[in-house]
Image 1 (cartoon, rainbow, N blue to C red):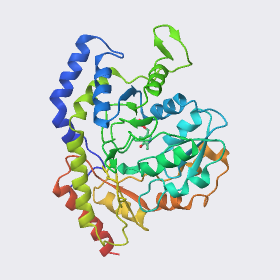
Image 2 (image 1 turned 60 degrees about the vertical axis):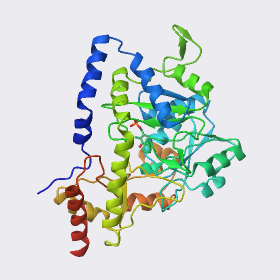
Image 3 (image 1 turned 45 degrees about the vertical axis):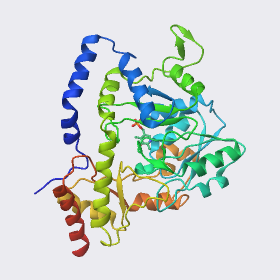
Image 4 (image 1 turned 180 degrees about the horizontal axis):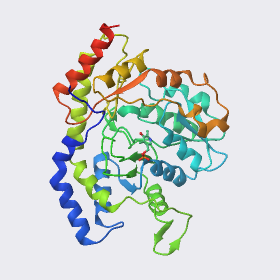
Length: 370
Ligand SMILES: *Cc1c(COP(=O)(O)O)cnc(C)c1O
């Protein structure tokens, strides 16, 4: 039986093998193992890719979010608006700076933050909005930036899942005051380990993040702020530069796979296919369908050798880590409905038409056999 893993790096790795090994050899021989030339080069290249003036490489996506909030001066007593259906890291970053996460429900069609629901959540303590470009689809940044401006708030885009996506032709990670991304291996641009970055057009915010990631120091042994060691790894920066050159093509492959699913799964069972909002593009970090019989379908696909995942099975407000906020089941019904019906199908560069047919045939058999 044909197997279709949830994710495979095989085809991507084959395309970059020689360049990655050459990058490692150069790194190994040169002996500049921390903040050497690779980090500076990748920062330049990623800033150009993302159409921003500044990129600062950091240790991972969670630290990128944390340092963004830190650079904005967010602290205990402040409130930060986050989507109720995001990955936990968005919320953890808010906790790290001592602020309170305020959950706002997404639009149920796009699963992205609904700008119309944000004003009701704004109080005198609100400082920041963190839109998350979930699953790879760009949020409506013009609307969110306009709201932020009207209320004097900062915006930190969580761009971990949407490198290369746009809204009204503007790239995610280029609208917010300071934006965070992740290069976790499975992201659209993934390192061979942990890595992340911030992107911004504000040189002062970039300067602060640059100091904060390096013990709060701009000149050796001079520390103007209480910083961290959250630097982008030099070796990973070299690998990321190799992979960045392939990102557009790999995103196009993801879009082609999504489009094949869109066509092949139309009107199958009670499946709801992902919807892209007018003005937005989607780079399909994840292809997330919804169905009332999610768990049954997931098990059936597993028996057919097809890997799927759930993004995410439990919304942040129902996690043990946030029990102290006192939320209960039913408080964010849209996030809860998404979490109990969503299923992410395999989508990765290198997937073949045979892989796709196997996934779609298996799904059709499940619904026809019921
Ligand atoms: C992956 C991810 C993060 C965290 O990135 P790490 O590099 O794993 O720390 C944050 N937010 C979202 C939406 C993510 O998908």
